[in-house]
Length: 241
Image 1 (spheres, one colour):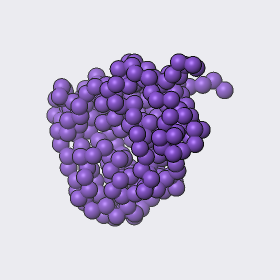
Image 2 (image 1 turned 45 degrees about the vertical axis):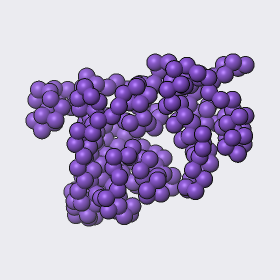
Image 3 (image 1 turned 90 degrees about the horizontal axis):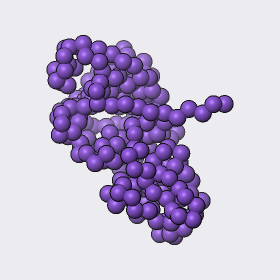
């Protein structure tokens, strides 16, 4: 257990990030209780309330269950793909005990078309990095993700895109993503998408479009993701107010 003391960002976010990585470990996924809050706080050299805040957030997301006088543990079989929490595809698959396979990875420097320029609030034709990844498991491709990154990040295209994306942005670019504004819809697979997923043309796909901002509210990424229709489901808890 350790946090990155050299990187930028609030302490509570670093502790939360550490907790998310901790619960990926097989022993905790298999039912072992997490270390006590006070022990985690002492080990990290942070306030106990900072640890409690991180654990409480994971409890609210349905990832952990906490019983007074007993302990805190990962909820077995309750690691869904959620809309109200931030998980990379790699993290989600690890939690399900699956290894991620990259079937295609393409990085290019391209001029922004009208759609991308409007989404990122830049001039049409501005050069920017576009990342396209066809990913899945040993069973086959599950999603196609296409991302455009704001020119302000000064990315070169030589970044290590085999890493989980937001981990790479934090470690290599010093960018801490915080907010994702998303739209989700069902679409039919056009010919090129059908070929990538090995499905019939016109087959149902889940389409997720999002604009990602950093901790200062600055635009970072415009992302389109196409999911194979029979491979994903999303869940969200909504409170009545």
